[in-house]
Image 1: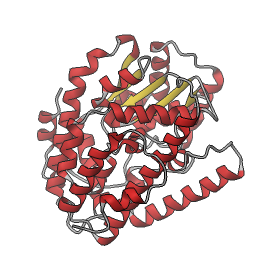
Image 2: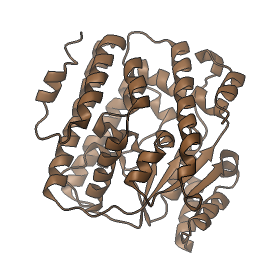
Image 3: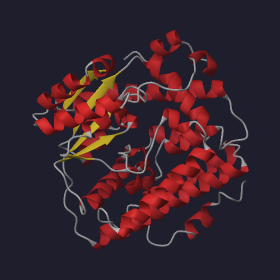
Length: 366
């Protein structure tokens, strides 16, 4: 066993109350899987320990805050969903141009507490620390920005928020941990969304807008938990040919794991990735009927790329939202300054990961 990943030592390093014990089982499974299956490098073990400890420290601060303050119900959320690399980030950033929308920013996820007012010295310090994290992240995992670009002030997806319950694909991207991987596929994610809601409530104390705008490909498999936590949620589902997305997910996983592990099996990454997203899409297919049809819109990736403004207007019409001239102009301005994030600088093929276009389409045709 790698002494760097010791459950007792990690928990003893956390100052404060972690709240409900919903974190214990996934934490034990995660550490066991990392120690016994991941074949972590020395720096990979240090990185994993830092990640887990940091997530628990944020959880302790958040529990202290929610236990000491009476918080209001969060603004109604809109969830952007779809396979990774299906245009979700492009649409997410486009919709973020609407000042009625609020999304967690990367620096807020890294340093949510104590709360910081906009422009304050506290916020500037957090931005500096977040930029340092991004700097070392880019040094540690070279090329990651080509697949998932991040800035300290950019809206970030919920994948990093569900780490507060120790249930998250973040850890699976880091290393081959099949036991933990299977565990979260079968795990109840209601505790994850309890902490997700608490996180949003906390951020709203400083800035509350009409709606939350949220994104995470994994939301596809957690419709029941989302609806129980946010009964008034709306959903945007982007559809793209999975044979175009799965190889990119494999490439992202390979890029990250190469810095954490002493061994890298690309064929294993391919088979695990295909199996995981097949399970995700199967869950979504079985639960999407739970969503009120007036609260769900399907978007074709091709339409989003060809005419993003028209797609956005269709979304606003579907959900009875107002798009004023200022918002539309901001969206147009955004589009003129960006490629939309849908073109990858990485070269990869399905065959590199033991897959084929035909296999992916056959397995993921729902």
